Length: 92
Image (cartoon, rainbow, N blue to C red; front, side):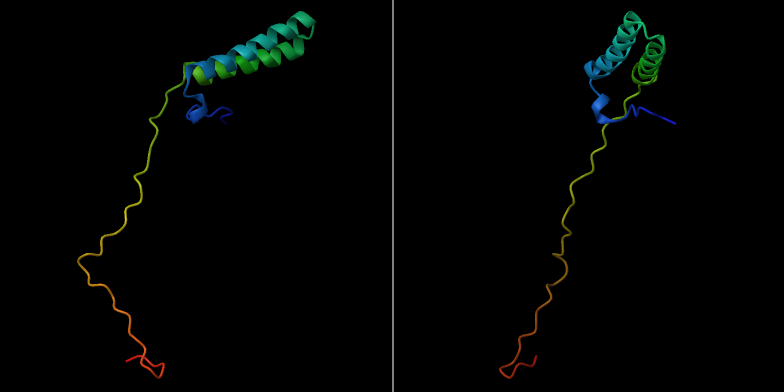
C-alpha cells in the first residue's frame, strides 16, 4: 500500500519534496529534545518513508496531456434539410 503517490503533480518540485522530508525529521528532533521518544520514532519513521518515496524511488512520469476534442468535419455529407411545415401545419 502506497501512502505517498510520487506521481502526483504536487511532488514534481524538488523543494516540496525536500520540505516534507525536512519537516518530518525536524519534528522528530523536536520530540527527542522534549523527551518523547515514542513520537520521535513515529516522526522519524514518517521522514524515512517520505525520503524513500520522494527521493530514493522517485521516478517522475511525464505529464500526459490529452489533445483537445476536435469537432468532426461533416463537409463531405450534405446538411440535413429541415422540412418546412405547410400553411396548415403539416410537413410537405
